[in-house]
Image (cartoon, rainbow, N blue to C red; front, side, top):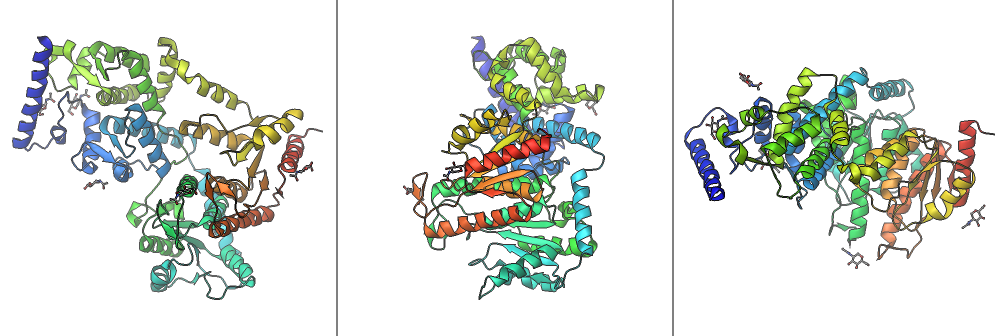
Length: 582
Ligand SMILES: *[C@@H]1O[C@H](CO)[C@@H](O)[C@H](O)[C@H]1NC(C)=O
Ligand SMILES: *[C@@H]1O[C@H](CO)[C@@H](O)[C@H](O)[C@H]1NC(C)=O
Ligand SMILES: *[C@@H]1O[C@H](CO)[C@@H](O)[C@H](O)[C@H]1NC(C)=O
Ligand SMILES: *[C@@H]1O[C@H](CO)[C@@H](O)[C@H](O)[C@H]1NC(C)=O
Ligand SMILES: *[C@@H]1O[C@H](CO)[C@@H](O)[C@H](O)[C@H]1NC(C)=O
């Protein structure tokens, strides 16, 4: 009986609110957010709703392509990688198959998490040291004049793409900028040196990626230059996708996957340096002119210039929503996807160690308080409640980090942390500085267990092995930390893998002058990768990337081996030398 009454009550409420919203064009945007359930919004979430609704196209969901714009609206500038992580975490937490949007409750939590982390970041580093370094290098380069200097080097996709002749060069001429075009009709080996000189001397490096070339070498090149702190402007007008033809051959799916991974790593590295990634070439050329004529750095380009600004790309996002979800599920033992009033308060307390009164919950629910015991809240609504009162908690306690309460709250009140133990172990592991990071080819390789680990153990050297039986995106921050703090990076690119993402990353570290040892095998003709036999054309593109990587390593005095055992032995010697062991 009661249940039926309740249902019809919800229906009536939904109908009523739909009708009132039709007829009363109120100034309050929240009335547009009509659902069949409680409308949860307080002063804080109401503000966020305004930003959200600007870009949700009236659908109540924020599509992948609109997420960063909506965050910009509240003065947050997430990178592509951060947006990808948000979508992934949100989809996992809400058990959604589709990985292409986020909902309002999730949006609130991400905004707050990022805001908090931006704030902490600005307290930690009054001057971002990375940017200072970049600017410094930029100035130094300007004074070291070389013969035949060009302002802009035009790197990236070559034949058959026409972006240089058709778009970039006419525009550069309009802006009166000098440029070096490395594409020659008749190409000879002597041109390599000319090209290298031009690249070294250029004030700005403009790289374009499109969907008619693999761009393997160009990816490695950009990563290397960005690692060196050179001023790069990166434009992505398209990317090779499944079914795309490159030089008359359809890309194989396993290749597309490898290319996608490499692009993701590259864009993340670039955005972590505060360098914007453009999707429109004319805008990028305009920005190049601004950088060169006004002497600003690439990192200072803003939305007003048409650049997609990125800030604090190194911070990880998503942990707060995962913690909230774990708390939610811990109480929602029947897996109904809904919590009642008591459960909401209990879960909130588990997260924050603070009490939430019924009055506080109902004051932000659009219902009459007489039916409190019948109210239920889904995950999105719970996120809104947490976010609303979390904001208040932090105004009372600015320095205290709310989400560290969440962590400790979970430990003390509930035992669900069992599921997290694997991760905890890795985290604890990481507090110990490792000597060697075992980077490079992962899939279907056994060089770590068969060669590297036995040798390192024999010499009593600690290592971090990123190859986990079940890898999860959430390990990425841990992996980055391990990489940042190891003494020597050992990177092995085997001949049985394309190793594109690894090569991009290694190139970046070479640019940064990290202590690195490299083992680089060529892919042989006829090699089968993931069931796909590598064609000659692919072979050419991949070799070009490997040659570029080896050249860069040579320039920085980084040893390059083709024998993994020798590479591991060299890494061991390096550790001994750097740690002062005898
Ligand atoms: C509840 O929503 C209706 C429209 O849906 C609005 O007119 C009313 O002011 C809201 N009440 C509260 C307490 O927010
Ligand atoms: C929300 O805003 C209104 C008007 O600005 C204010 O009167 C009210 O106290 C605020 N509520 C909370 C819980 O801060
Ligand atoms: C983004 O927002 C606009 C409104 O600003 C909307 O028209 C569009 O459908 C949204 N989605 C995408 C993917 O652009
Ligand atoms: C990729 O290669 C495998 C193995 O050769 C083949 O079965 C598959 O059809 C190829 N896919 C495409 C899109 O060419
Ligand atoms: C690699 O080098 C080690 C030690 O120098 C040697 O024993 C081994 O045979 C080499 N392996 C290959 C495949 O050449």
